Image (cartoon, rainbow, N blue to C red):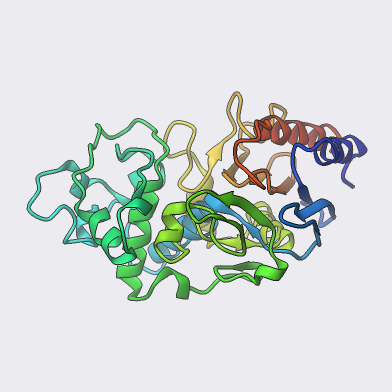
Length: 332
């Protein structure tokens, strides 16, 4: 069962105004599971109670749960190899330019070691077609490969690789139950009152760059229910998320503090300091996160709408994530 101290931490965060709502799900290796839902899906312009089956904007959980997994599935199917250079699948990349980006590999993009910048306001560039073309032609300042620099741009390029390999937009890729690119707004958790779009976002992608590309990109755009995200966590804990070889590759170290799809347990990480060194997880900007401790035999998902109605609330979501993780493991 979810420990009382974990429940109290989340109740305090909700009742104290730190976050409008929270959903916590925990699954153990022996098959036991427990869930908790607190607070509101929306506060403005009107209050909407949070229901357990509502859709959450998973933000950067899109990276491991969709993009990295899809790349690894393509590797399993023989369509891609982790050490393929980008130019093998994006021959128009940096056309008429000399740049090391062309030779950076899918493995380097997955582990954020390709030397790309972290982010750029692509949504200010114009129409989706312009953004899609300019992403490939922008003269990005590419640093030396090897150092980990968390990059949305790298995952946007991985998304384009997937679209080219499969000949279809990301929005048309098949998803597991409890995951979607097209949630029902009436059954979705509200995100921010977006100053660019000038409205409260509910059932539409919070990430500006993904939104400008039609709502789905390699770095963001996936929505999930608590049950859907917890099912992903359970598959990672118990096996079956990929083939045995694919899953082993997805969760073992490939760069400093990084697996192919996740962040490894390390000092100060989001899962808390009581996790075993083999633990891994990932978070999303909107307030979402998923963690797996295979040694302790437990996995959990904590979903919050900490950006509603604004990302500038000052609430320390990282502290809450670590505290919840520690109380779950202490009670395990």
